[in-house]
Length: 466
Image (cartoon, rainbow, N blue to C red; front, side, top):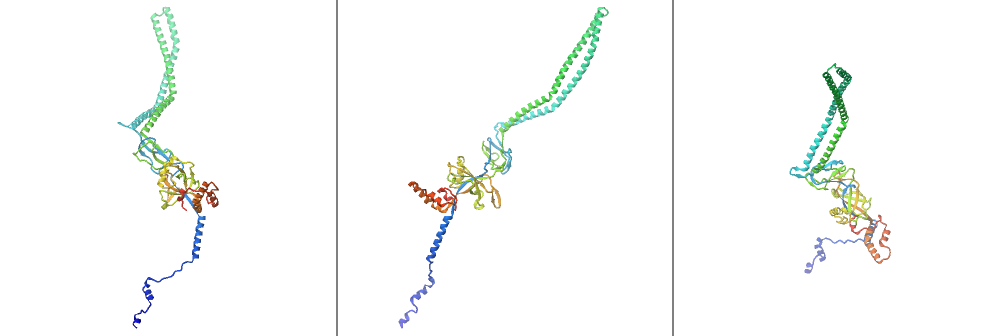
């Protein structure tokens, strides 16, 4: 009985399970069938194969540049060194050809002040004197002509009076001569004394002298009247000659005045009509000859993206290709990308643009950007729209605005890109062995890609996005 009372009521396994029940119960999960797993794997492999065979990959290059009109910006430069005295326009103003842009003080200085300004003032006084003389001559010409005519009329009256007197003397001369003959005959007959005859002869001589004096006066007056008539007839031509002489002197003074102005104050005018952009100076700043002062966007000029790439990226770029533009002033993360089209690709490199393109590429950090001293090719892209939509407003593109571009240059099947290393290796082996057709030619002819093109450079493969 004692042994029965000491033995447990339940089995030890049941009690142990009871103590470990708080851990939880064991559940047996049956795994998926091996057939289902195999089917899923086969389906996945088939999908991947279809994607690789039918899917395509587009390789893109990245280019940097600026927005410029195809004809370029017209740059206003300083003709000579000096200090900017006045700026007659503002940023964004529209100017006409010949309109004044800047006034530049280019005069030299002495103890008495600006030599150019002193010369200008002296020439201005000389010009004023000549103009005053011109006005006096123009006002005096009618008065002088009237005086000449009055003098001629007076001479004509005197000439008429002398002619009448000469006519009377001619009528009296026969009578006086007859009286002299009678007096001589009477003296011969001793009817009159010699004294009486001498007195009569003296009167005759005085009469003849008076007549001769009258005739000489008539001749002199006739010459004087002819001279006055000549002066009257030539008066208008003489006045014109004097006016022309003064005009020549005024023209010479004006030329000297222009030269003096050029030596004291230079003027820079707009060469074309357009919109002012990028004023690069302020009043009081000293400028050097040839220094750029501002740019003018000509009227009716359309902006295009002028991009620069190196020789490794230019091989597949053609006019008409699609381009995505990103403007630095309007980040594409917020304002989006804008489409464009390639309109021009240079056939030869532009060495004069290499430094500028290299700086632009370094800022953009692109692998296809030109390096200093490397060949630079220019690509012109026409944007589909000349504005950017920013916060609901159309912001017009501005010249000189930095722009980045993504240009799609090559599109092929995915399996072609995956087989490139293998095909390249086979080509290398075949070229070394010298037998058989190139594997690349066979692969490309069998693959028939969507856009036939040569195998791309391996350096830019990472720049595209599938």
